[in-house]
Image 1 (spheres, rainbow, N blue to C red):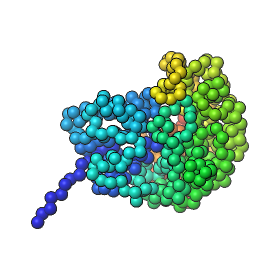
Image 2: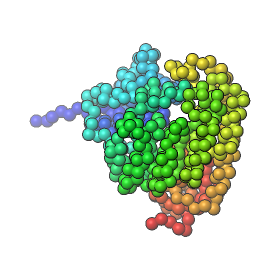
Image 3: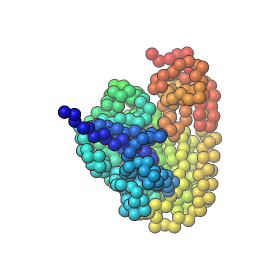
Image 4: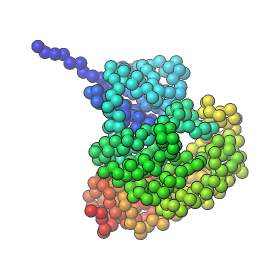
Length: 441
């Protein structure tokens, strides 16, 4: 007797926002695939019947992108090009009630911690045994490792605690297990991410344990680079820097968003640190880790930011000579403390100030890159494109930092391999090189 089988709906998952959202999407994919549901990630021309949009709600531009993407697929549903549309992530967590009224084409909305509910729409259960196992959607040689969720900080401009909740650490054992799983898939570099790295362990172990986690992850065979993203500067644990200096696998790279340098703005932002304390921390970090690559981000146009306060920030950027800098323009976010203030810096002034910081940084970046010329660096090859190989040094994170560009005429290179490269030329944000005569075995 023939048994009729029911073909499961094909799914296309769209990811918007930061690397933390990216990891959430990978966990969704892992759960769906484990239940034999065909799923693609951001597939062009997909024949999927179901679309899931994993949204970002961080600032105005991110919210606009998320809403436009939802509307795009809502229109596709109205044209019968897809059958169902689900929305998850930060925007859905924060604005679900309003969005349900505005976009009725969406079949269901889910918050940041509602994966079991999303899976229930496919008539499958959340599989706890898959914890720590996930299908990565990044290139196979690197992956993000989310070590905690949520944030306990009280920055006046930030809506992340509204969307992600309070800080919750994952255990060292779970994270080491996931790192081993990633290494089995061919991952060589892991980037530790969280809303706030330095808080790691306080809830589980009653003390900060990031340095211990770094040591444990350094013991995972196959993982060669460990990179730190999103560390809060106030009361920064110095033992993290000591671990970085001691453990060869930990990249001498630190992403530490500082947001501002004027004491009055820092106080209004509720950053719990002064300019003098920040400069002392940077000096200490560079003393303990002499080859440290320091990445930071700043926020311009915060309510009440005067030209004088902005000039303090400009002077700070010039003197500190950061290796990598990003700039955000202040976004007036509902339900934050800053929302009670008047958003009194005009949009055009915010843009001018952001451009000014980047102009200052452009010269700093060029000088730093020029200092790399004639130096041999270890480079991880990320991709091949337009006759060139593109890779990164220990001082560069994917998507946001410099690249090392090697002409393909130098020879065949495998994506995901480490090579030694002699830097021969430099621009503001990239360097060029040739293969060194001395290569690792």
